[in-house]
Image 1 (tube, rainbow, N blue to C red):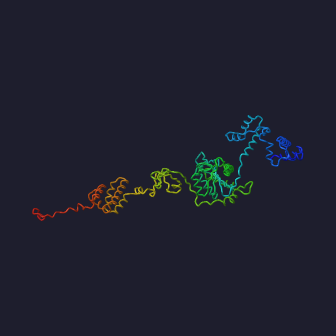
Image 2 (tube, rainbow, N blue to C red):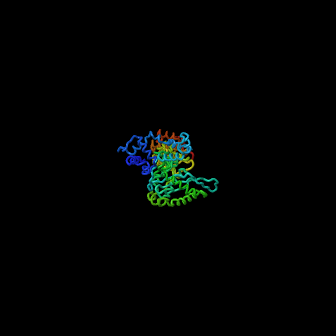
Image 3 (cartoon, rainbow, N blue to C red):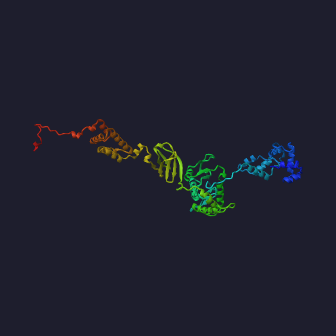
Length: 505
């Protein structure tokens, strides 16, 4: 705030000179003279009115319509300059030259840069972050990759460097992976939690595809596998806002430390495997975490042991098993296909959409959050169908065989079993035999077991090996008539013309 009121008081009440006023208040003589000139020009009188505060006094002396009269050099529109600086290739030097073409004798380049920096600082304020022990871990990948020369290979393969930093202690974890794909991303988290010996409450990550399926500031969609990992460890995933690196400043700083104090120091060493590189990283990482801070007492390791580690959640009994999630629609044959193999689900889900959880050796089928089927993973073009998933009629057809049919027929009678066996020998294919067995069961149910046994015996007697013949016997009631062989009797006639058996001897 300008010292206007003090200048006026010393001038009007003490009648001090401009030199004395400037010396007393620590301002220049020109500034004191300017205050007095402006006061006389604005129309106010001394003493000032009691309700006139310093801000109102300054507004009277420096009205907005008079600002241009006392400005020596025209200032650019800093909002336009700031917007232009966001464009690719823009520099302050080019913008300053464009400014001078429109304002001859304007600000020098140094003053132009100083004013622009002041304007930038006035745009936004940043809140100091206070991290609760055991609350957050910030994860990200380093920008540079590291070459690995595998044995027998001329060209190197490049490894990605995963970095995780705990919020309260700034304790760093790093490891090398072959890629940023989902499987490597999940493996890095599992190893990081094991290294910490516990699990933080929140994971703050970047918006890479392995972590976030759909980027949104308010409702991001987390990758299903990544979400399953968070649920397994009892933690929560919060993605940072896109293009807002300050949301994960700890991770950015951790990446910078890993690049400078690990990757740069290992640049002249040649590694032939990912395991060798990770061993070297862990060795230097231990040194970094144990290095004392420059401005505060302790180190990252000591703060981790005293702050973060006691507040971490305990690790679950089993580590997370990597599994991928996908969606599939069940076919009308109540089967889903995974990598060319078909697996059954309950027949009631035919035509409906289900979720698949595919792990190393298991395929699980989920519907509305509940597991409805589980299969051991198969290979090739196999078809895996569980009987309990089949509709009752389909299950009977699928499990039917000739042996079970004959066993059933023997419970009715021997003739039924004998006739059914002879008819089955003439059938072609599983379906024809199944239908034949169904017909026998329906006839037995309709006419009863006793008549069915007699009818089959009659059919065997007259060599009627057809279903139509068996039906006719039952319909016409021929099963109740005596056998034709029992009706043949020898004649007992006596006649004079009949010589008899004794005549020939």
